Length: 355
Ligand code: SAH
Image (spheres, rainbow, N blue to C red):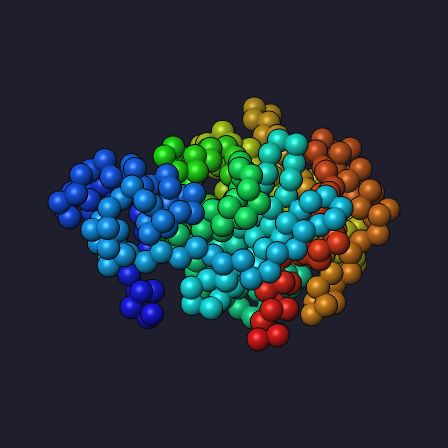
């Protein structure tokens, strides 16, 4: 069993890598393009009847094949949101959520088992980071969820457990794999990546020139407020982060959206909103450039361990109105799946406690 886990995963290979393997094994190159689309639909080589026993055996001997296994599946009676707890080959588990929108099904996937960023309001980081997810595990969440719901998933947000830019190489390979025409063929423009603000990695990502959407978890307008809830701010402050966002936009032309989780008494006053508008305008706009700015306001999901409370409806409305009055688009995140509890990380924590 242990040996199986150490073999490279079939799902981590690009078409080109699979072609090279076929040739090295004395097989026809076209076999790669024959099996790749099936693998990405969750069909194992053993289930591919047109392969021949010999090739099936060679694949089994050289590679491992694991899809995340559905350990729990919760379906919202209100809006059809589906939340999965997926089991991985080594016994760890992560969460993914499928949200049904008019423009198609969107999956929110996890990027790590746990997280080491330490944001004070977040359930995913409470036990620290256990390990990074591999490209096949990132992709496997999409494949398994799609198989399970029986409908195409057309959009991906990397906003589940973990910090995607803290798992940079695997995430980049995953983006390439999921975008592959012969596989799931999900366009980069249909993929969002959310980060707590790893400035050096944002600069690296900018050079990759991928038209994905970047989301920044800002959550505070100044260093004092932000450092109190997000330790990463001690390393990269608000000004440096926003200047990097401006450079990212200038380089890629892709607008960036900002996430702002409203926590009662911490970052949700009208004064905080005024400061936020001021700092966004100062760093992202000048007389010659007008970067469209969009702030997503998210009333904090209450996590029992953190003790943070969400802001009342009036505070949220006042915050949004203040931003709008300063030329900044603000929307309040619609809460999907509210009946299946589900601020990210909580299902995994509950399962861990049970084990
Ligand atoms: N590490 C990445 C992506 C995962 S978190 C990031 O920080 O962006 C996805 C989003 O959910 C982030 O904006 C995060 O700050 C937010 N979040 C985490 N815990 C939350 C909670 N309890 N309530 C509301 N939003 C939360």
